[in-house]
Image (cartoon, rainbow, N blue to C red):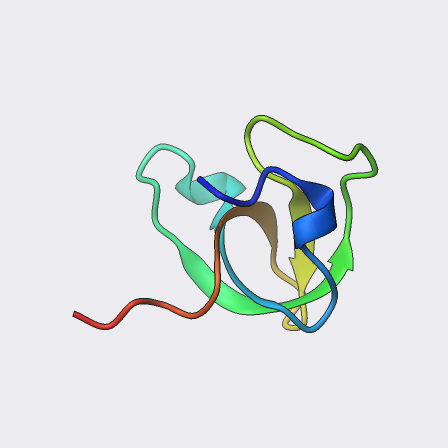
Amino acid sequence: MEGQNRKDIYPGLEVGIILKKDQRSGKITYGIVKDLLTSSPFHSRGIKVRLEDGQIGRVAEIGPPEED
């Protein structure tokens, strides 16, 4: 996991997040950061963000999805 430090995440960045409903499966949803919702500089489970499409979750990875 690389989305634990707030300083690494900013609006306009493409990230992969885990939505609340997907926490058990670990399914990652990709999008562009609109707002940072976690105010602390570090969070062990990932910084919580709102994507431009309105979905909210914790950052699991930074950058676009990796191609196989």
